[in-house]
Image 1 (cartoon, one colour):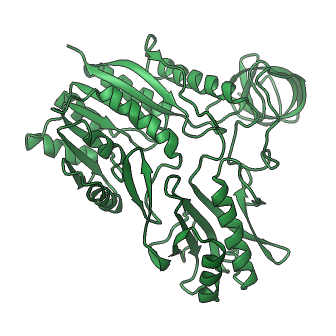
Image 2 (cartoon, rainbow, N blue to C red):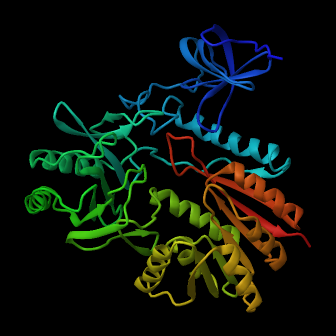
Length: 457
C-alpha cells in the first residue's frame, strides 16, 4: 500500500521553521512531516518548493522569505551559497552559539537520555573569522588557466575562489601565488574524469605563533614540470616559506594524500605553539586547525581533570600528543595511545622538543593497548578520550568501566556519538557532571564538546 505523504515533489508550500538540523538546514513540519531547507532559520516564515520526498522526510528550496529571524545576517562571503565549506554564515555569531548549545542539549536528551546534565553556554571566539591555519584546496582549469577553490555543495565542481573568510589571510596569499606561478610554468590541473594532468591540490600550513609557512603540492605524477623555476619563484615571492613539499598521489581516488611525500626545498617540518608547548608539524601531521580555540579546549580538559601532580593519566586516541603534553604539566605520568604510527612518531618528537619526560606513547588500538596496560598494572586515575567522529569503540568503553578511573574527561567532535557513549558509561557506573561546548569552527555547524564524568561512589 502506497503511503500518502502530506506534500509531493514540486509542491509550493508556505511553512514556519521550527528547528535547525546538525548540518545547518532549517526544519519545517507539514502535518508532522519534516522538510529540510538550506539557508533558513528557526522562527522564519517562507514559501518553499519541495524538491525531494522520502518516506519519513523531504527536502525543499527557499523561494521567498516572508518573515526573517532576528538572528539572520547577510553573509560576508560572496560565494557562500555555492560553496559547501560553511553552513551558518546567514546566522549571526550569537545565534550560532545558541544553536550549537541547543544541538548538544537535544542529543544528550534524545540519545543519551540525560535530562538534567548542565550544558554550559558555548565558548566562542572574540573574532570568529580567519581562524584556520591550514588551507587544502583542489585545483581545476577554466578557459585554459588554473583555478583553485572549494567544491560546490554536493558536487565536485570547483567554485573559483580568491579568498576564504575562515582561512588565515596568509594562506589565501600563498595559495593564489602558488597557483599563478604553476600556471605560468605550464603545470596542468589534474582531471578526475580523464585521470590526466598533474596538480591535484595545493595545501598551505601556517604557524600562527611562529609565522612559518609550509607549502604542499599534491600531484598525480612524480614529475613536476619546471620544478626548479617554480621553487625559486615561490621562495622569492613568499619569504616566510620554510618548507616546500611534494606529495604524490597517482590513484583514481577522492583521498587527498598519496603514500609518497618528499621535501623539495627547506625543512621537513614547520613549528607552532599551543600555549607554551611547541609542536613540529609535517605535511601529513594532524594538527588542530584553530589553535586559539584548541588552547581554550585543552585548558577546559585540564580543569575537568583537576590534577594535583600525583595522578596517572591515560590519553586514548592521543594523535600527535597535543592533549597528552598539556596533561604532563600537572600529572605524575601520562600514557598516550594512537593507531596511526606516524602520529606517535610526531608525539614522541614533540615530547622531546619540549623536554617532557613523564609521558609514554604507544602505537595501537586503544581498545587493545589499554586492557594490556591494565593487566600490566598501569591503572589510570584519570582517563581522557578524544575519539574520531564515530565515537569510542565498545571494547574501550567496557575497559573504562572495568578499570574504574575516578574521572573520565571525554572530548568529542560529534555530539550524537558522544551522547550514545555517555549512556553506556552512565549505565556502567559513571555520572555525567557537566558539559562544555567549544566553538572550534565558527560559521560551520561543527561543535566540539568536553565532558566531565566521575565514578559513582
